[in-house]
Image 1 (cartoon, rainbow, N blue to C red):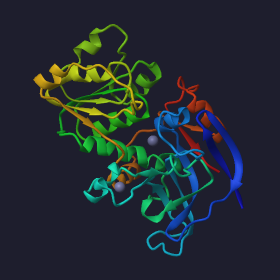
Image 2: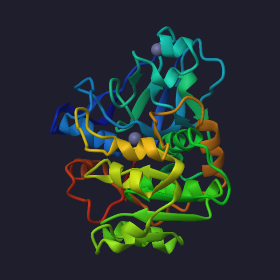
Image 3: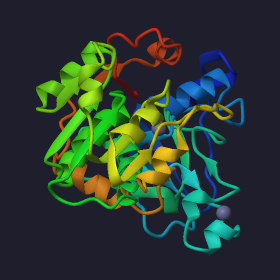
Image 4: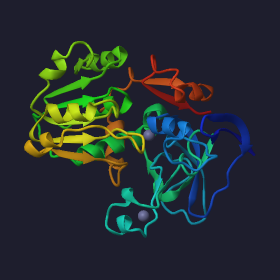
Length: 333
Ligand SMILES: [Zn+2]
Ligand SMILES: [Zn+2]
């Protein structure tokens, strides 16, 4: 049997074609993919600025229905509606052995090193599937992965109800970050974002949204924040975070800066203000909470998601839809 599959042959070269439906191993399940999100990491993979094993069918944010189980599968069943943790941990490296498997030095990921969700069917090891309520829209269910990442990032901070926060960068992750900060008790959350349509969706949800290039005053007035989050990964945003964060405050570096990129920073400010600059990479254990939040409708996503067809993915990866799409999600058929 064949299936439709989007394949990245090499950086910049994508093809949609019919390929053989994959076969599963004894501890795998076969997923009929319902929906798959396209994210910044996919864009980096497309441009060759994030390490991947090509050719590959990308897509690491996906949900679907189990249609086949291997002989050794015990906890998943045909018909289950599931979300996927795309990260496959080796189980043997120092990180895996010391309770931080998401920092596995031999990690492989579906959609990066193995075929992912931009195919009609995908092979997933049983331990990476998480059930989600069948009434959840697949376009939202597939976002369990990015929500899990955001929850892990904020878990790494010392945050309290009533704190003041700012998020730099209003792409999808930035929008999730705004909403999650509010869910966690922030009384004031500000978005700093140059693109008007991204500010607009945040403002409609009650967030303060400022344009960093519309005169300097608004940006300069941002001060003494308990938490700042860099979801932009561009320009001098990290230094702006350093300036805007209060003494003893936290800076979360959540943007996927291209490998090798350097930025200028004034270390004195980090020293004098005793700031914590905290990185975050994928997640070890937040997917169950992410699923609960999605099932509960905790995130307002209607104005942020755009349903696209498989044939539109390439335009998205090339940045041709940046003016109208914040988050493209493919409903797979
Ligand atoms: Zn992603
Ligand atoms: Zn490992």
